[in-house]
Image (cartoon, rainbow, N blue to C red):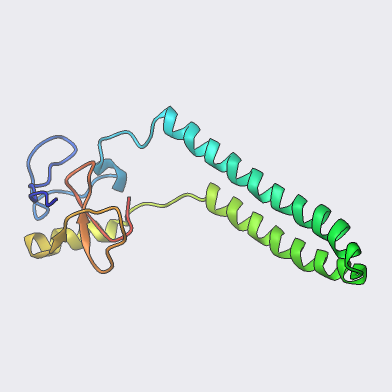
Length: 153
């Protein structure tokens, strides 16, 4: 499904081309849509809680079931401290990485991008937006008709 490229509109609603339009005060000001709803917030929190449950179940299953029950049953109890140290170290790094990724600010489109779009103007090839990564292609935002760099909002 190809959408026709429309002429971008400023936040004020006036028609503009990026050659004559000032960049927005903040990059997300181009999208006049709200960033998210309460339902989206709670869905994200539920997903995070489910992921945390999986993390802790994995830790329980390995440390309690495997190390305390299965290893002794096969006569390899002497390996349990080494396996515990290795697994728990990797598990802690995974948990810390998930925590950092979940709470990190996703950032915003840099002001240099808007300067670039203004300089290039209509010569900038813009690909239709798709729900997949499109390397080395600028796409059109679905919420607002603003060109965006790859992997942006």
